Structure formats: C-alpha cells, structure tokens
Image (cartoon, rainbow, N blue to C red; front, side, top):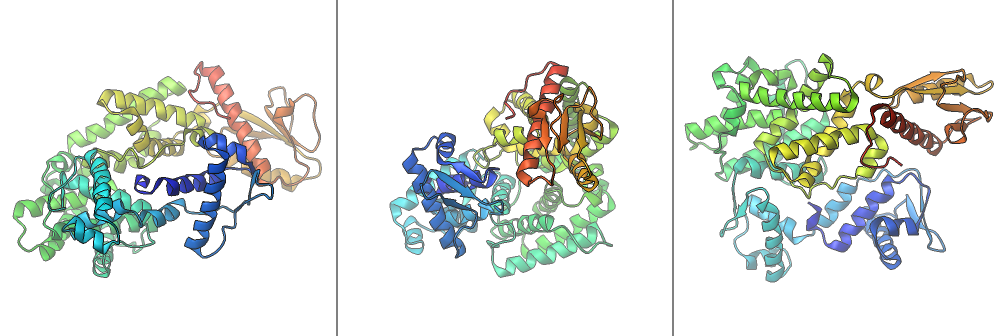
Length: 508
C-alpha cells in the first residue's frame, strides 16, 4: 500500500528498512548508492530527510544512525528496534489516496469539491488520487461508483481493507469509532467464550486480527452491503452438519447481525453468519473449534491437494517424503492461508516486495524450495509469477522452515568446540549452535577428519582458515553472525554437492 506515499517519502521508508536490516556498525555510503542505484546526492538528501522526519514523528533524534563527519559512512548502533510500518503510516495518513480510501469505505464522500475542502487539498489532487485508487482496486475487481461507494465482490472488499488495517494499524490507532471498538471487543469476548470456554485469554495478534475483521464486517453490514457469492458454501458444510461449537458461533453471528440490521433477509442473514465463521477460520482464530471437520469434501480435497504437491516437491528437492507429523503440521499451519485464498482470490501484488537476498541469507534451502513450489502453482493456476511470489512467499517460506525436520533433510555440519579452560563458554556456544533454526549441527569437543567448523582459542592448521573461528572469550553478536553465515554457506555447498541441485540465488 506504500504506493500511496509520495516518492521521496517512500525512499525514506525503503532506506529505513535497509538500515535496520544491515548487520554492519559502519556502512559505506557507496554501498547504499549501489544497493538502491541512487546518486550520492540522493543518498545524502534521503538520509537527512529520514533523520529530520523521525525526529519530527517521534519527538527525538533517531538513536541508531548518523552520518560520519566526512559523510562517507553511515554509523549504526546495535539497537535498531524501529517499526517501519508505523513510520510509513505517518506518511500514508497524509496522502490523498489514503483519505479517499477511507471515505469510500465509510461512504462519507459526496463530491470532489467537498472532499477537497475537508481535506485541505485541491480538486485536481483529489481526482488524481482517485485515478491511483482505481488502478489499485482494479486488480481486486473493485470499482468506485459514481456516488463514491465501493462495488465488487463484497468478501474481497472486506479482505482488502482487513489486510491494510492489520498491517499498518495493528493495535496502534483503531480507524473506527469508539462505539465500533466497543462492539468489536464485546464480540471478541463472546467468540472466545464459545471457542474455548475454559480459556479467557487470547494472543494479542489474534485479538487484533479479530477486532479488525469484526469491525469491518459490522461496518459494511450497517451500510447495507452483503456477501453474495457461493464461495463460502463451497468451503463450509451445511449448518446442520457443522460441529457443535461452529453451530453455536453461527447462532451468535446471526443474533448480532439481526440486532444491527433488523430488516436483513433470511438468505442474507444465512450467508453473513457463514461468512463470519469462515472469516474467523481464515485469520487462524478458532483452531479449537475443529476447523477441518467443518469443511466440505471439495475444500478438504483442496488442502490435501496442496499437501500432495508440497510432498512431490519435497521428494524432488530433498529426496524424502513428508512424514505424517509434517503433513499434520502443514495442514494446521497453512489452513488459514489456503481458506483465505479462496475467500479472497486476489492479492495486492504491491503489498509486499519480497527481499530474496534476505530470505536466502536466513534459510537458503527453504527459500529455494518455496520459490520452486510457488512457480509451479503459478504455472498450474495461470497466475502472474511475480504477484504470486509477493503474495505467498513469506508465508510459505517461514511456514516450511518451522515444519520440516531439519535433522532429516539438511546436510549435517560437524562443529568442534575446543577452548582451553573455558567449559562455561563451550556450554553456552553449544546451546547457541544447537538452537539455530534450519541447521543440522552436530557439536563435538574433538577435531576429527570430518570436522567442518572449528571454534577454538588456538589456530589449528588442519582446519581451513575460513572455517576456523578463534574465540578465546565470549563472541560478540557480529562474531556469531559471521559463524551463522558460514554455516549457512556450508549447508548450501554440501546440499548442492549431494543433491546435484544449484540454488537460483547466491547465499552470500
């Protein structure tokens, strides 16, 4: 959604994300120039603009970066806990397309002239903003009507705004009235009581997602917009065949809709209650309900078909088939994603531009596996490959990294830790190494013929220099990051040699 932001401000957001992601303490200005393809003047002006804006937004100077005296380096601190989405939101809230998007959703816009007066802009700026919004909505099959309301697949309209609000607002600024906030919180309590009667708490991320989903749903209902397509009936069994908790949720949703829209038809009421249940499932709330058993055979078959495709790629890439446990985990981890893709079949391909360099730096084998799978799905479904990657790469890549048995599919890397009179340090380093995600590390105190990496206080000539880490004392976080990167490179080297597969992106 950052296309709404003016170009110069968007460049500041991009620079902020880049600075936060870099491991260096001192970053040459030339490296930033090369990464973005900017001139030295543009880099310097963007850095200064970012510094000034962060000071204005947060009321203090940015604490984690500054220009060196000779303006050839950017000096960074270790602490870079900055939420770039919150920072981007400051710019987005000032943009004309965002104001138009809010007002078409709330149906408070009546003319360009009226909008321009209320938002301190010009009619021509309002018209240009609307053209930008038209282009964005077109990919979702949504149109802004002549009376400035939204027309299209109602489930898709709600999904577009849900993704936007959750990403940029989260629990910071609720973009609805206090009354709607109170109604949403009341609904959350009732839903939790049905889903898990003995558990009164819910994870904050789920609470936020549920709050926005409920608020958007109720707002659109009260404006007289109802879901009309049959996608939900393709997913959910008939109400009488749903399990007991799901039937209770349906009854609650019907009650709430009837209270707020008394003149709703029985058919609309039926569809909206079922929509609310499937929306709950698609945001991964309510796994205690037994979501899978409420699906139609075709919907369950869709999920099983996805798992079979993953299994084929798993066998082709790693040389193994999925275990029963991995299949069960995949079914649970990707349930919401797969159901959500049916309810909202289009995605904002400008919502996220995937940084493959960062993905390959963290989990290179998972990244390559995920790209292969997405490209295959895109070809089978006749999807735009770039849009499919942007929409699903991050979700699938992280999910696979959490599910696959790394000790079974990843090459083993033998690390010898031999530090004189430092038993405590050896124990700490062992715990740190064994805790690395997506690594198959075996730690020993002896140097053998098949030792890959050595950590010691003495340089042993039999181990290549690039695989030797001399740490007589506790390493810094940067020292350990260098080790992690070398382990990642070695994992790929071994994998490519054993499997005869060349990864499509370099790891280092």
